Figure (cartoon, rainbow, N blue to C red):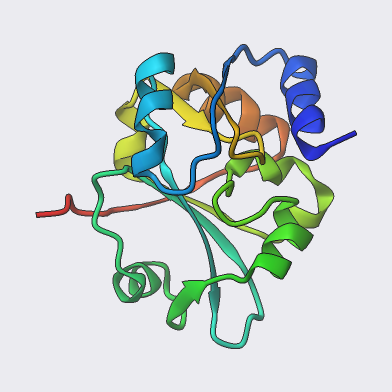
Length: 167
């Protein structure tokens, strides 16, 4: 079973309703605008981060309009300077590839040690969209279900961070 199939089966199993849209492969947050429009959601930037020594990994979700600076985020969470995690570590932990990073990968046991940080302003968005670990589809669910059903079913409590808007 593919990671995508496992993710959709997991959502079905915990009773989280979602809409799924197939589309050509997307590689940037700008490419996700069509899925956002089609599904009536916000597709966050999903950032897989690690310190220089690669001793840990962090998943951070921000609004598309947020200004993300690794130095600022690292300071906010009390970490040494973070940079983007490599493709091998991403596949190993979240079972996905660059361009398809998603909190849906948190369902896998290999992601147990990856903390999740959310842009605090995402809490006020009605619907969030994520790749099901495959950048040829986007699934959208109510933010309330993501925060109140999906994450609790995983035993996860997200941490929140602040990101200013891009000027």
